[in-house]
Image 1 (cartoon, rainbow, N blue to C red):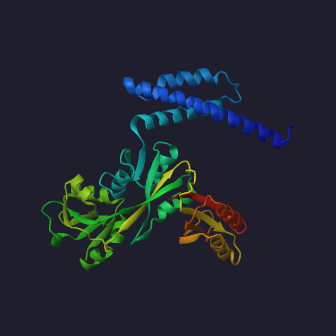
Image 2 (tube, rainbow, N blue to C red):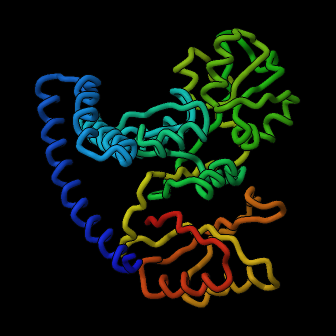
Length: 356
């Protein structure tokens, strides 16, 4: 039996060769994409894919054949994703239909990309995780209504990384069917975040609230109902998209209402010298003073903690993980030392990403 270190060395050497072959293959795929662009040929060719898999799988011994088939299928899928990116530009998954603040944010952050609307945060996250989309753009916090806990959980438990964060101004409006008046409105429907951002207006006008999956979907629902007593809370863009009128503008309580959107992708971008913020998620050991020692490590190595939030860790009852945003460059000597110090008091540490 070979020594484990020797075997690992062989694997590392093989991986290095595979990297070169991967780059060579993707260069050829780039040429294929250019050919398809010139000829108008579709990206997917099921007959060609099936023939290639069948032919190549026969070159591998039967015991390993099922695994090699999976390897081939994955290569084909990666190639198609790259071709799609070259031919159509980046695809960005968001939660919501056209007119939602997520769609508006995507056009600001990725003006040339295709925006792919999904039914909820989980679906948008999964679209980027599977490779169907290049990125997911999801809200993580609102300046007046706090954290978007569902997205925080996705970042902690999922496999995507945060590669940038953008602050997008959000103006909420009362949207109703044409001909309706404010005095007729009895019920407002919208996403819970939007309802929270407009809590004072809703209370002052004695309105009933109904939670909806997102603001634009709520606007669409109001348009389809045609009920003059029901209004949505959402953007002016949503009003135009679904033929509604803006009864009252700027009904959010905070005048500088802002939502922070995180750009998530399958690979963590290489931390750069200009990056001055990072997201760190961790759980501490169940012992006295563990959290204090973890936070002390941040201060000891010169990192300013901008925010610290806790969320239930669903892997164990009555345990919690911490979502920490810090100022400073994690790609530094002090960053490395700080992470080493955290190892002694933390059960789990996840670097979710760094950004400017």
